[in-house]
Image 1 (cartoon, rainbow, N blue to C red):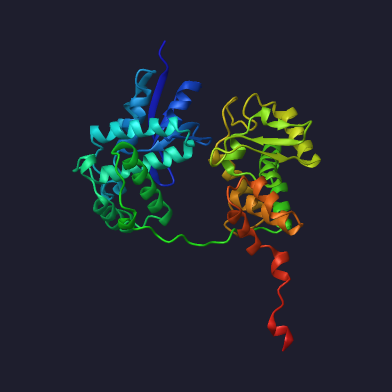
Image 2: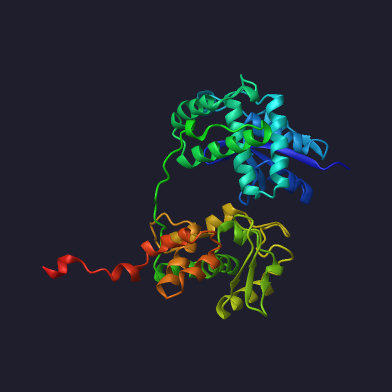
Amino acid sequence: MATHITFKPVIRDHKNHIGIYFPYDEMLIQEVKSAGARWSSSLKCWYIENTRENFNQLYERLKGKGWIDLSELKKQPKTKSQHETPSLPTLSTEAAEQIRVFEQWMQSKRYSSSTMKTYTEAIRTFLRYHAAKRVHEITEQDLIAFNNEYILKNRYSSSFQNQVVNAVKLFYQRMEKRSLNPEEIHRPKRSKKLPNVLSKEEVKAILEAPGNLKHRTMLGLIYACGLRRSELLNLTVMDIDSKRKQLYVRQAKGNKDRYIPLTNKILTMLDGYIKVYTPQYWLFEGQVKNQQYSAKSLQSVLKQSLVKNNIKKPVTLHWLRHSYATHLLESGTDLRYIQELLGHSSSKTTEIYTHVSANSLHKIKSPFDDL
């Protein structure tokens, strides 16, 4: 009997989304994740923003893998915002095929899933904007026009602007065997922001706030090992080596593996968590057994901790990683070791923590004191 897959209209962050409902199925989960869908614990479904492009991609991935029920989705009335927001033209068949081949090439080159997703979405948006042109007809001037008339006009971030430039350059080098002249491409200057760091007292309050053991363990492990959010969520039970007191982080940013030492305190917490929750594969599972914990839910855990402690700062999970690195530096850990623990390719990336270390700053004597 064919699996019943239902598309329903749902609202997330005041925007229209497609809710995807189906019985637990690993193959279907991978398909919707590949299409860019996310899991919602509150809605009990996977969801993706309701655009024609997303719908077409989702439908193509699920077609033939079950019976797709669109009856609820067709009832959804268009909102005012949908009429007011101009949509980009539909991607041409030629462009869609080239993007598919480009994505396969990135897979063969072992690009990370996040980089593949970022580049694919960026090039898809760019080619949709220039849908009136054939792919081989697009020039540097078209990229400049896209920058001025789409990115800047809609006030998109400099990060998105750089992503588009990188994606377009790589796409044309691979698919069209030609390079776009970098001198003709407008790149924004990168803002030089210092990392946000919490005091040890603030970290302690945040980590102890959750009443749920799983939530305390997740936040605790991020700080104890300086993990990125994705690194925590991608951990498996096998990545914990209790005998050697090590955590194995696989294929992190830049496809790098690394080992991180585990203290007795965090090992005891992990042991207690595993005994209570008995995870099978993913170290941290969602509400559905054998399903990876969602990034959105993890962010919600942190938010609740901040509310409990009345912390008004715009703290993110990455602040815990920054705090870990800074606290290590302040305790006398050599910068080279911190670089290894964080998985940084360049020491220059790690050196930024010297600018926020309280120990370093307190050594500076103000000339005011000599007056």
